[in-house]
Image 1 (cartoon, one colour):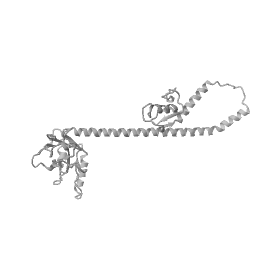
Image 2 (image 1 turned 60 degrees about the horizontal axis):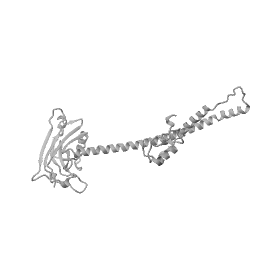
Image 3 (image 1 turned 60 degrees about the vertical axis):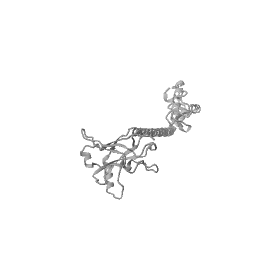
Length: 320
């Protein structure tokens, strides 16, 4: 028996063949019984399956019928009577068959078209289900990537590497915005990161064109509302290092360090807002003229249109 015509449940010829939305064929009686006894899943690939996902497979039914007819024909002996002359009535029957031949052919072709259209419709259903599965898998993969990224930023222990890709387009936006005095300055914020995975401050970095000297980039750091703010001492005190990575072999990095704390601690290191939608302390702290834009390319800091900034934040945690 050709495996195409075998029911995976009863292992016999398909009786009243049906096809599922996941592309498998069964006897109608077998699959209905399976769903009632074993739950709403396909016995082949455990895909969720309901009665509305099962369709008659007329094309396969026709093929099986033809096979059975051929089998019966082989077992039937045909009497030969070649010496007998055909009677006038027999000639008339043959004439009728010849006349009806085109009509029978057209009818067969029409049935074939209907069957092929049904098969195409069933395949469309299978393809659509596969597309939905792919979409679900892509969403899961994106979600997993987001979780991994958030975990990495939470567990970086205050050492954060910020890669700014397509920097030229980002810089152009800043320059275009600089010419519009009525618009707020264009600022680019990094993803936020924690200084400790279980009890740390949350920070982010920021770059923008310097207001005092638009030929330079400003680099600042902001405190961000975090999960542990209630048990952390405020304002933040510690050491911060900002570093522009020189991507040219043997090139010197541009490094600036600062210590914050004690009397007169800048308000930028106060606890960020606890209500409202704003999560970032609007006051930043850093260098208004950190690097000249002209030095980015000539100095080796910009490679493959990517700027790399490293931020290191250290503090001593004191839990109340």
